[in-house]
Image (cartoon, rainbow, N blue to C red; front, side):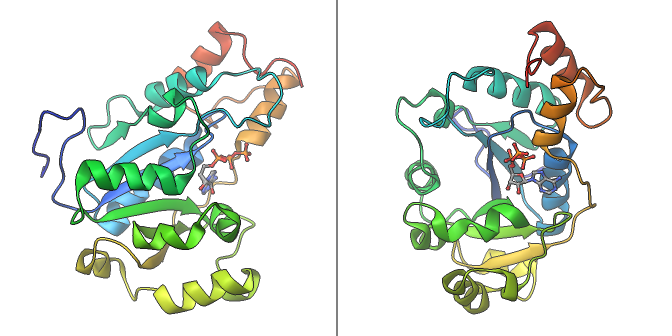
Length: 229
Ligand code: ATP
């Protein structure tokens, strides 16, 4: 293992570091396989999970950002290549991905290869993100396939398709040639699991077992989460 433990909470890696943001409401096996397979396909040293803070436009949440964070901690516990970053959850202001990447650059320096992991559906919306073009000046982007969401130029908004075309790397080994700026795609085990589906099952009193880790399901039950539609 390449990890060199420093005074920081997170180990410093000599390999590319994966960054995985999401609402994780709740975290499920689609997320876990994406992160696990990204490590293998992209030769990452590890993945830093970054649960999003509470979006300000949402009504009174049934599940708090702290609870989503707890569930991610439970799901990732025991995997030495997974690290959980609570900064967006703890921030008082809504965190944009570009701000998080800028903070990580300050923390990790200019030379660390950063790889933002996104599913195909999230990637298709990337050109709506705050200062989205700046993302490429801070990190690579790795897009995983997801059932129902093809990763094709034709299905992307024009401006994003142009970036995809210009930045696409032939293979994952090219991620090491620069700290940021490339786009790669990778095929993962196709799991048609979504947090929406899990919330619906639970709200209807149905079983969500085997769609997410038992430890997370236990937490949901202990805290009576997702009971009301
Ligand atoms: P929701 O159903 O509430 O929209 P979600 O299941 O899509 O949630 P998010 O937390 O929004 O989960 O997703 C975080 C990231 O994980 C996104 O980049 C998304 O594309 C990716 N992702 C989520 N589920 C899968 C899956 N089953 N396969 C591949 N990627 C996934």
